[in-house]
Length: 321
Image (tube, rainbow, N blue to C red; front, side, top):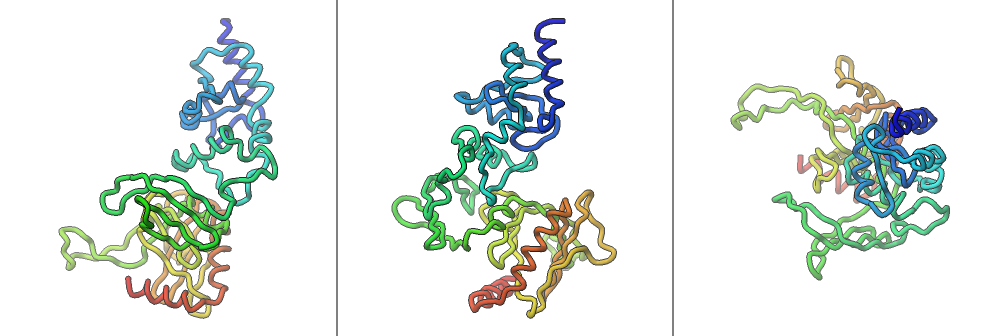
């Protein structure tokens, strides 16, 4: 048996230890790569991100690469559980940890925060995004042509808004609700939504064609105060639509389950029904815990009395639709 064959066999044994059977960064099953500089086992997608940080990450395939004896020993002495205790020692409760189902942008920022900036290694460390203001450059997608352009953004907790600049003047100001866990966490949550309206088919743009009922579609959701907005893609600049969540006394409600006879999509079996004065909205979640978390936040909003500004927003959205 060659030296590398012995190394690969040893790595397979190390993979059987608790925590090493999933990617250290996104939780994907059966990781096929390892970082011999950090001592963690990772999936193919995350290995590509690690490879883009060569000053701290050196990745190798567990099956195809040549492993030195000291590298195998290093992996044996560390592993996912030990490195998680080091690099995720103090992750804020509101910080969203991406999974293998999330886009690469989210996973890359998570990986860089852990290993490159070491934001969570020291308890009590001051984080830049916990200050009252945050300023920096982001790529923003244009509304008309979809092209991403560099823009300077300023987020102010005191003013409650997010401004961005093209040159020296404010180009746009987005009012922000107070920072809440639901806004940060739900932004990358995915649900299925079913449109219960019967809509005319758009074929040939003939409004007199037959009617049909739409099925469930995957959409990304964010809850901003009373506005439940959904997006086709998590990086979309503008919502495809939104649902206003009023007060229970005004005939708004949220409950678990779907109306009798409604069929779900595949594994997404945990339904939610939102009733508004105009119509019903049906959603399905992938897990029961997701269902209960969404219901909790929906009911919290609906149990809160509406302000004059809320009534104005409700009237505006009704007028749009």
